[in-house]
Image (cartoon, rainbow, N blue to C red; front, side):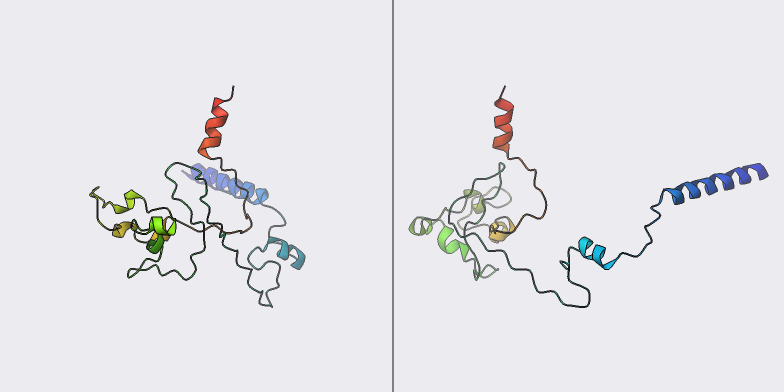
Length: 165
């Protein structure tokens, strides 16, 4: 019994030593102020003793052009600014132009017929309450700079590659 305890203690000690030796010896070293600026993305290089100015807001694309969708069932993006639009439980400014009755007058795409169905598939006279808040699925596009490389390939490009010999 005594030998088992000694062997267990030796094994635990060896594991602890192996873990300690695998650590970076400089991990506990203080980061110099120059290195600190290089790793701090939130403060954008500003020291902790000063208040950085806000980053500029990205501009909303206002082209009024329909964008190509990247995958099947993708909700269309909003090709114009919606700043100041009332969109709450009392009113939906989007429906002024995109409602079935007004779409032709405003030359706007009509709300999809799927938005007039309840969860049981019953067709309603008005937009379903489940689909009333457009910005749950539809978003405006901005000219914001890309923060992370994007390797997404849309379905049409994938199909084109698969057709090539």
